[in-house]
Image (cartoon, rainbow over all chains, first blue to last red):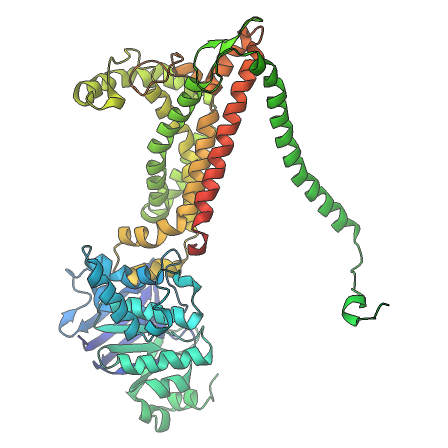
Length: 259
Length: 320
């Protein structure tokens, strides 16, 4: 179930370019941690290093340590595929598989782990995951329809259902609401609050109200300067970050006095 | 009485008609219409020219296989064995070429280092530039010689399987050889179409699969191949079209006989296109008209194959 993430001294490089510099943080289980900061400050890049998705980009590499409970995510014998089964991800744009039905989308990941999923176990898993993503009532009568036929907000909840069907311990969300309307955004935020009972949730967002609404802990990232790497400036309880930040930079960003 | 409803009488603003636009629109329309005219013209020619022999034919054209058309009296000819050979050869080619083409395309797009991928892609395109007569020469001068011992081996160990039953042709000039050469010929088009569609698979779909814990191969099965299916089918159908109509290479490789035979390792079989090419110079009497009738059948087969392919591609459109 939910696991703690311990990051120490993490640098992220694209080729020779240092994109994120020296991040250390602890992310508590059964909580929501929000990453905020201006575009290009490396928060999404950093997020992707938590399940090694950055390795999809050619030339991307890290230095430093990421522990999932006591397991080293970058240990030499660790398979990135296994890490991603443990640390699920939801993307900025809803990306259900267009060629699959709603049902098949939900069990896509679970099928990878367990090829011999029998029909009733699969049915159970689909219902459980869709209920978990607050989507069951809306789609239970059309599970065979294409996932791409749903609204944007429903598609995003379908992607969340797909991610939790794999039963990960951590859920990473990269601006999950930035392509959605306010109503759908609210539905996702409610869902995040429910999901944190069982998962460690990390969410990147550009919407500071959203960070304030859903997260327990907030981490503020910023660039050290143009062309310089992104850095973790400050991390603390969301209340405190939004009311009494310690750093001037954080305060400037929170209050909108920021270039 | 007419009421002046503003919505119907309102002046629809018409843009100034620019001469360039008019010329371009009409020439584009003309090109589109030209396609239909050419297609209809070819079909009309085939029907008109074959009518003569088909009415004089004393055998059933569609269900018999003899070819005794070079006469003015009581011609008897049928297209069955030819049509069968055509479809069989093209089917062998498709079965052999499609998996290899998909493999090459996947390798180029997802596995090969960039430099090797570029060279490989270029080489595959080069295969398409080789004239079919050269394939024919290669087939008869080299390939069949190499294949003959393999066929003997195949018959020895797999002769119980009907397709591979003996007696094996000692020259290797069999339907299987022709199919293999055709497969090489249609490989580039299927590869190119598959590669193009694989390159278009959105990054977000691939990341979705990887984030669920898919390995590269699982990602390809989950996101790439389903997305690329219409392109693969389209490429396969273009390849099939070429294989059905391919004349020169088949005419050179096969040692023809007009029988319906499933035995791939025995000499025999013939395709419509190769038959027309070989028979035309000596056609007399109803001969030419009969060959045109065979061409009409080839035209119909190709048309059916293309329509079937379009049906397959469009059937799952809502999932694409």
